[in-house]
Image (cartoon, rainbow, N blue to C red; front, side, top):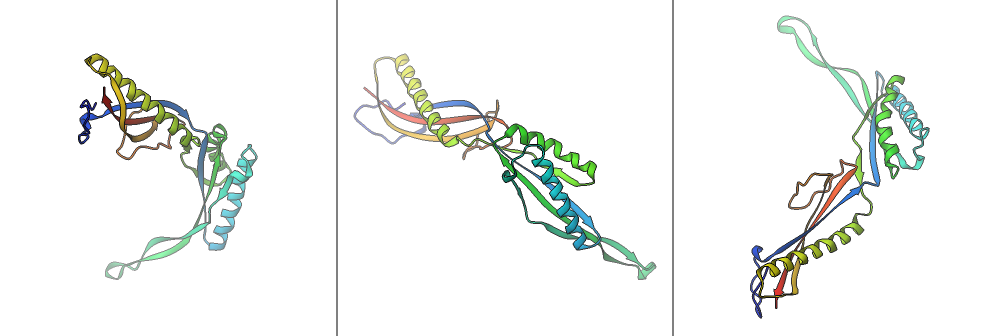
Length: 225
């Protein structure tokens, strides 16, 4: 708290009043993907199997209520599969890489505001394993689409908290009255999983949790009258 009258000395960290605000938010957008693989001795056959398996995965999702336009499919990739083989015996024994087939891979991604449904799909998509489809599900990513509006609201609350803290300090000390705001700096905004308080110098932006806590910090300097 800056206490000198009629002068404007260089501000130090000890001059600052820190205000904060915290609010619980629930993610309203989810992004999730699953990876499908197919193997075959022939490159063309690997692609063919992958195409068929990806189509089944898409049908699985849309058949359970996922909106078709919210489903996207990545470009297919393919890699040759090699195994080490040994030929000959004794000093004439050599190792060589033998082509054993091809591995084709493709991802299906869903981005939706129906968070509960997509969470369910992320768990149930592996039912396709029973149909002979090699598929692995990734962890969903959770976002909050109204973060810009929320930050403005939270900064206002943090600024009000800084003012209240400054007034309480002045009232406790006595002999002065809190004056005008000299300056204010916005600190980092941390978005953490619910009930966690870790911070970082450039701010956290958690995407792993459905429920999050947004914590906003403001540093303020006031004059005394």
